[in-house]
Amino acid sequence: MSVATWGPYAAATLALLGLLALPRLRPRHTTRLTEFLVLRGAVLALMALVLALLTDAAAEGDGLTVIDRPVWSALIAQRTPLRTAVATIASDVGSTGVMAVLAGAAAVFLVWRRRRAEAVLVLVVTAGAGLIVLIAKPIVGRVRPPAEFRLAVESNQSFPSGHAVASAAVLGVLAAVFAPLLHRRWQQLMVRVLAVVAVLTIGLSRLYLGVHWATDVVGGALAGTGWLLLCLTGYAWWCSRPARSEICVGRRIVPSLGRWSPPAAF
Picture 1 (cartoon, rainbow, N blue to C red):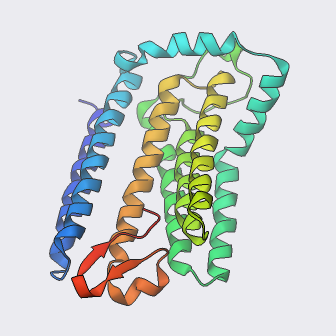
Picture 2: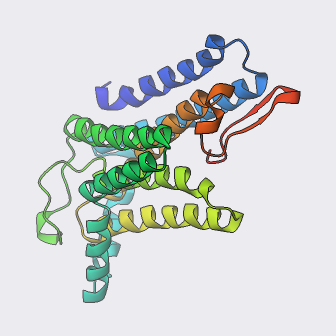
């Protein structure tokens, strides 16, 4: 079994064990916190399992990659000048460089607003997403779709989609951090919905431009979202101490009941 296959399994196992061990480090933590961490660990393990299947299929060219050719052909057949222009803009906006600049600007703003913990969270999520792409692409080594059908120039490997990883992680963490700052629930919901729509649009643009297979984008979105969830879970645990409650977005504690609840963003 290759590293590309067992890597996500190992990462998920370590993440789950780590989450289960966290409450042991702080005896005062309640059962509610333990349940939250176990649930997050289970979700991460499930995502890692699906990602492992996608990674193995991408590396071997079988399994779930059966959907790639039909999806690729269908989207190429739908090309028009207007759609190409829109897809190009979406792809440019969703590039790893733009996402890094966006995250950096958000971090500066958060520091200015004296929300240093959230600024660090944004930077960690962004840097981690970049490392995932940098490490995973050469390990899997998947070839991109035929060059004659591509509408954008790409020279590196295909799996996972860097645009999908970066947009899912960066836009996700920005939505998680900034949505709770809005006062109305519908505004918070709108921010999160817009983030999801943006990630889907960016992923679809990469398929339309012919530079990725469908499983590249799905795998990238899973990897970015999984890393985001892991970071948000760690941040929620870090915020669980009463002494840090004032510097965490959306923190809610009911001292009289001794109950813990995660920040509203999570």
